[in-house]
Image 1 (cartoon, rainbow over the protein chains, first blue to last red):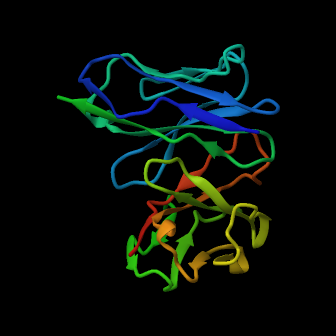
Image 2 (image 1 turned 90 degrees about the vertical axis):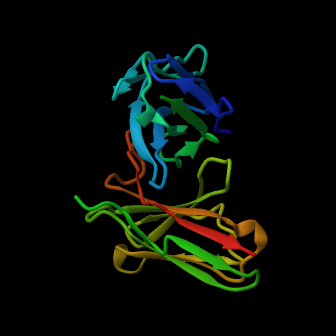
Length: 111
Length: 117
């Protein structure tokens, strides 16, 4: 079946630190991969996506590269800010099937 | 552009009571989803509508949950009777694509937080 596994949180970093949130997936077929972010009190919103192997999605300083050989889509940011504190969800979609989400990773950034 | 609207924001009920949630998707979005997000877990799809037809309700507990999308716009999700394990955030999402696209981007509402006591 299709599933997403992401690293457990919370992740606590100081401002300007480097961020990595690991995400691996299992899929039948060729999925599109997504990162969604949920800020406190708000709904999930799409952060970035990649639709085929070796694609790099990027937005707001965040990046993730679709690695088919390792079935991974790790989220990275070179220098986090307090405003990046949120819950980050890795997700996949295969063709006409539903979007499947990971459990989420909570990020706290300290000033 | 107005986002996905959901109400109420919070709801507290006792077990065995009934509850209903409402969602108004982004104007023109044909596809509407209801997700259940239990604390510490990712959203789990309950039901998907394409216009006013059901596309996927395989994970909807049909003995107690029901949903409708009359006229292909607003949607309501109902639980009757509620159980303790139904405590969760209920998220509504919509998209402009038909649901079959690899690039489908979901737009989420802020959710309804349900506590069943």
